[in-house]
Amino acid sequence: MYALFEIMPKSNRPSIARKLRPYAILIAIAIVVVSKFGARLKQDYFPEEKGQASATSKTRHIGGFELLEGCQWVDQRNNDGDSFVVKHKGNEYIFRLYFVDAPEKYISDKYKDQRKRVADQGRYFGELSSQQAVEIGLKAKAFTEKQLKGKSFTVMTKWESVFDSERYYAFVWLPGSTETNQNRLSAALVKNGLARIYTKGPGNQKDYSSGRYDGQGAGALQVGKKYKKRLYQMEAQAKKAKAGAWGAK
Figure 1 (spheres, rainbow, N blue to C red):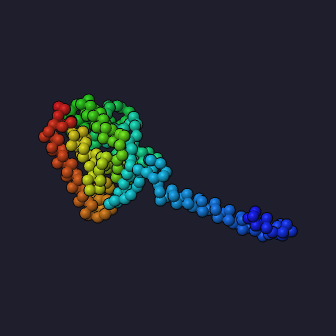
Figure 2 (cartoon, rainbow, N blue to C red):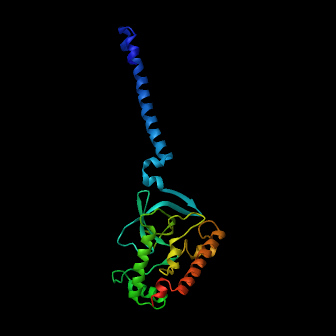
Figure 3 (cartoon, rainbow, N blue to C red):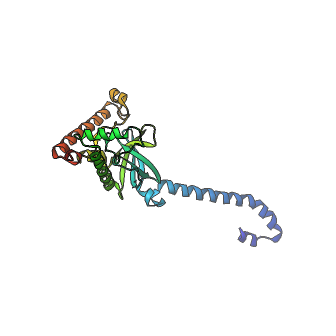
């Protein structure tokens, strides 16, 4: 623009500048808009450039569940064998495993009926004392932490709240698992005698009876029933091998 002014008579420069000023403003606005759009486009379609955490974390859906891939274990004092804090895309969530219940890691009167719960857990594993049940609970916590801490894993959830708390029910795939090879933490805990088959599965009893196990019809319900049946088979094997709690008596 300045070069154009140099070759024009000086008398014409002010009028030409006034005429070109609106165009210059429009060009400047266009540059800003294109620049911002380009940055947004780059952010949306090339997430690997947002940092390592985002590059390995993504979300997709399967069979009525949301899959949170690239999850990370978060150290937290309340973590235990079946309930723990997970980070995904910079957000932290507390997940509780479907179908299984690991013994509590301490005995306290702070929570209602906790002593009764620990006693029930002990009886499930062949009349263990409450203290023995707690020892298994500590082992379950250590087992889960060892499986997940410092590794990348997948959480499969329908975002069902646990008793209207901040926790959500979920399946957790152990590191290295895939859709066709879903090596789940719940199964590993049962196989090692560190959890009882007790907690609910996805949906509620009405969902089970109506065939709406995960929003995909009766076929998906059968998948859920087969998984629970498989857990009982693993439990029978754990009993026979006296694994974990089954050999504590």
